[in-house]
Image (cartoon, rainbow, N blue to C red):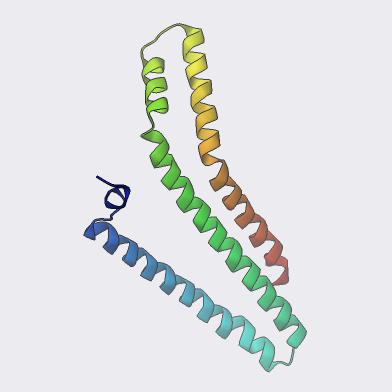
Length: 141
């Protein structure tokens, strides 16, 4: 089996992804509509253009941060699932549950922790960047 055939999604998986994408788009549209009708349009109608510009800037930064955070969460779940299937982690779990010497169990746990840290590090960076952008945009709104 070549790599292209292994990465094919089933019909159910494709439908689930389309459903998730539609739900996320609807949620974003609801947030955008609420922001426009409750915040931005009233500020412009009052003639407070500077405050509206700052508010719009903060909103955009916060939405980008939210997008990074969601991507980081998705990446975390994806790599966690892949990590749990890795032979190294499986072998270490078997060593831990075999009740070998205390030192062997300690080494296996340390190897698991280091392996998971390397696996999760990119997703933690996306999550952290998302939180940072959200926090930086919030004072402007």
